[in-house]
Image (cartoon, rainbow, N blue to C red; front, top):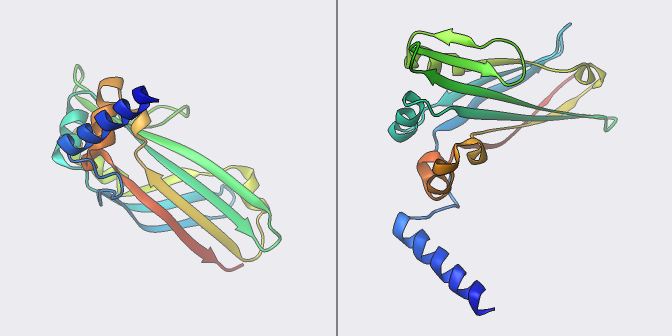
Length: 180
């Protein structure tokens, strides 16, 4: 029991030293608008305000990939449910001096000549959805959460990122309803 209390005290001291504030998220990632388009190919269209701080951009420019996770849920009046998770990865390849935006496990990355072009591409994202989204009928309720999962960062960055508000990018849950 004494060992656990010593560990807890050490964590509290570490929090105090690095300014731990897990309660607040940085406003570096916000959803301006989101909609689900149920055309022949259902898709999620998200307009983001993505403004990472200098420390995050510096890590990206030194080859640290950043993942942005999109978790979308939907439900119709008949309680049919659909859920999808998409992950985009932003990265820099220093040897070829190219910035990349890739959907993980899905096709080739989009290439950019500069970091500002890469960040501009994140302003509006269109993600294809599976066939289950066409099954939703009538009025639909949607929820979306966009975040940078700290667990996707390289090992040496995870602990400092956990304690730093700079790395805490989460839109929170965004809810909306669409009519039939």
